[in-house]
Length: 250
Image 1 (cartoon, rainbow, N blue to C red):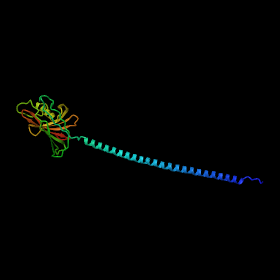
Image 2 (image 1 turned 30 degrees about the horizontal axis):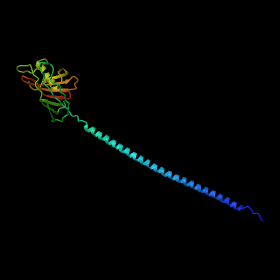
Image 3 (image 1 turned 120 degrees about the horizontal axis):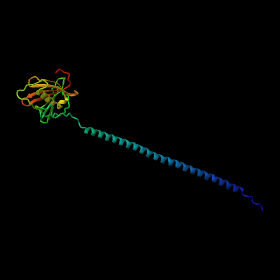
Image 4 (image 1 turned 60 degrees about the horizontal axis):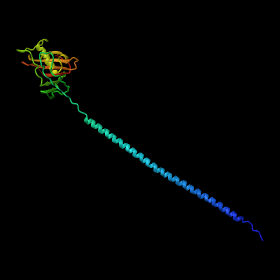
């Protein structure tokens, strides 16, 4: 009986088939891995883009919010500035001319109340009138470079007198009449007599009229006062000129 030869060809075919299957399986596995990696990359990239877009939107929204907040802040500041400007009071010139004649004409001091005045520049022939306690004050700017302002106060009264009989105006620097002239001048200016320099007291154009030129001791205030005599009542201021200078002929 003929011996059977080993079936080497079948075994070889099985080995080759098995090797082919292994290679095929490896290739399939590699393809699957590549697919997974590619899908992961695509998924991760899309997710990153989606995340980046909200961040950009957030930045844009934040910038818009900051801009709107800044605009709101600017508007608030502008409104506050407008309110402050509207609430700022307007400072107006306040003139107060309150004067009373001395209680005792024999004293050498003026006891009339001190008044405060704020000088203003008015056009020639322009007048301003204000009501004062017991009278009316008129301010005018004459066409005279020496005089800054002319003031007439209807509340001025005669200062009183100790003189009797027919009045004789005196300019001797010592008499009662002279001293009463000084009191009347101080009374009209509202400045104590001892705080004034009496540059000159002279005749005002008639026996019962006088004019006095005075200033404070530092010469910061300068006045020319017109007086009229009232029988039995003494000298009365009728006009006061605020002077620009003392450098004029008087």
